[in-house]
Length: 160
Image (cartoon, helix red, strand yellow):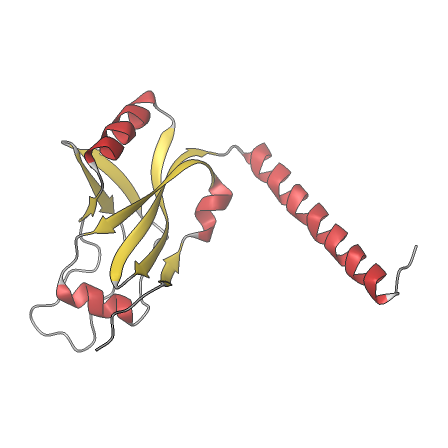
């Protein structure tokens, strides 16, 4: 069987980019059991309620939902169990320092296969206030209007 290469996204947390301003991102491996990997290969996972914590010098992913594998038997996993993340010691030390400052969270942005291994893109994020969200929505809408106008001008259908 040929070795898997490239990056295949399993799940992404689009809401996180809306609710948080991203300070820094990290790539972490995930400790999984066999039926979890099989369920992920089917493309089933939800990062909606997931977050990460640093406990006793180790990073754990909590609230990640990986549904039970359909063909699994009594060895099937529990869907919302706590999973350990694999990071370098230096990265964990940085995360410990930054999360102790306060107002900063560890939020998973996406989960994907990279060269056959499951990885999580973890973000050090600060929560946005309501007015920050409105500003980002207004900026996105303005960019969309500019793109529409440029498209119409390119087609010769420019109206004033």
